[in-house]
Length: 249
Image (cartoon, rainbow, N blue to C red; front, side):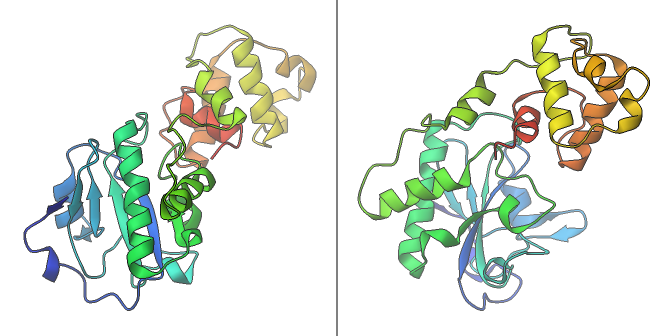
């Protein structure tokens, strides 16, 4: 652990209480200074803790930080929770050492502040407009934090549910592809209710769903879906878009 100079007096006033922990990803790399100093339109500190990709913990601030607003939970407002910003661009798989440190850090915070594991939340669980921390199933994450508090080893980082394993193994789809995986993505888009009727009105739904081509029309649909899910609207179906289509958090 590293204490960042000035952390004891850094914050937007004192915390009222510590009722919860909010887990984030930073959406960038080498960005501890952003967590400490802020960014255009939002003054730092943004979170009390920055977790580097190698598992190193940096204590950035002790006071209130601007990490979760508006909050869906009274126990996870900026005035009543500790934020952890984990270094990740929001797409790259989590290094095992960082994920292990993330869980151990949350266990220590629960122990220190007398918090139940249920108060450890992903940003995506307490703020409707946020997707972070990406690809982490928070139920499994909390299970491992609870195991650490009991003195048991956490499950391996690759101990995924069958749906998570399925999504992990799916290929990256790009415009111009023509295969059965594209057909699967089309079916999921329809099943999730994000396929406008006007798109298939002329040919019929069955004919549209049977297509295996990643054409311009489908690119536009995927980009629209990605925007609604607060993902990068790059028109590619990668791990995060597959997860959103399949409802794997």
